[in-house]
Image (cartoon, rainbow, N blue to C red; front, side, top):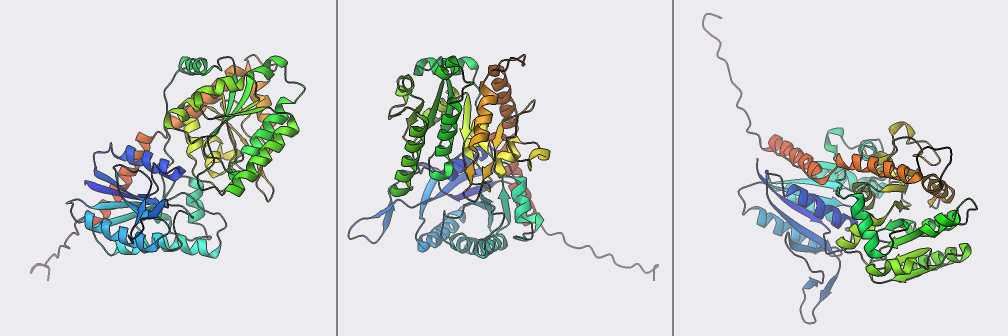
Amino acid sequence: MRYNLRFVSSYPERVCGIATYCRDLATALSHCSEVDSIRIAAIDEDYKQIPGNPERFTTTPYFLPVDMTIDRNNEGSWIAAAGEIITRAAKSDYPTVIIMQHEFGLAGRSDYQNMAKIFRANDKLTTLVNMHTAVRNPNEDQRAIVKEISDLTEGIIVPTEAAVNILTSDSYGLPREKVKQIKHGIRVHEYSQLDGDETKRRLGIRNLIPIVNIGLRSPSKGTRFIVESYGKFIQDNSLSDELREMLCLFVFGDYHPKTPQEIKKADEEEIKAVMKDYGLKSTTVREFNKIGRAAKNSDVVFYQKPLTEAELREGYTIGEICVIGNREPQQISSGILSDAAGFGKVIVSTKNIHSLELLCPPELRDQSGLVGKFQNSPGLLVDIEGDKNIPSIDQYVEAFKYLLIEDDSLNNPKANLRRAVGEKAREIAHEMRWEYIGRIWAENISSILDMKFAPKSTPVILEESVDAK
């Protein structure tokens, strides 16, 4: 059965992880033969009003497949968009499947539910919700919101097995048949060591071992603790002068555009204080091709601008080690983690639901301390500690030592170890590449539609024969 897809989600050019996820999912589904068309109702908040005109207009430049926008902070905009979606769906001969990307904070308290109620009244529409957060111990309002959304839609999709277990536990009580796991897709990038060497040569860092921290910054992303861990590591007496000269920490990406200035300033001041404590020299550049020049006299290089796709690819390509500091243990979806695996990078990440399922064997997921120092490991994971969710500095340092400092008792140098860890991550990523995940989505949607629109069979009534009487 052919069908149309309508996403309700943030979407590029808006800078947002869910926007990038939705774009990648829509692109993957566009290659599936069952899909007739894909359109996006983009959730945005960058609206302005022209004097004398009661209407508000988005200032974000969108292009197809975006064909309408929703003012995130205007309940009436959500309801109006629902009506417009129904009008456009009625013009097609095929059923329309609506996929709502859900995240607490992306909409008002009842916006998803109000939309879903309107869609539910139309037999031609089928609504699925892709949830990006599953809070293990929800408050009453979070629990109520999730249950309301479940009751109003045909299915809930989550990216991890742990999220399925959370939503079907007593905390929420969703029926198991209503919740399905479809893993986060990964953009797998095929490139050789020569490609990486050429990029490093062009940027002027050919002889360095770059450690990279990539993505939108905020205090919750843990950059301050990554910098502290790096500072503590390079102060270690066992670090040779030769290795010390080869190391540089690159922090690629600017703060999220919605980060309040006072929070951004406080985070920057904390990072500066940490660098001062450890005697780290840093340079901030605004042109990507100048990072090599900056690295010659710096321990840490900040490229503090929103990353283009080309810069994002080059950032991953040059990195020997990709360090992730997300401080939210309940995170079930991370595009940075997925991309790092897709590039075959050595990943050192904090432990959260997504990283544990992606990089850690089930039998080690409850183990405290640094996890990943074993043969065929696809990455290393550090604890998030205390009530303030602080990444373990000591475990980051232990991971750096394991990956970088040579051990004479080992037959293989650490460069080979890093290469093996990265290749194992890429191997996992191949099983979750977007074209494969898109196929799973398409088949799941087809199955739901077949059940919903299958012709009802007419019961056959067998007449009793005369001889049988």
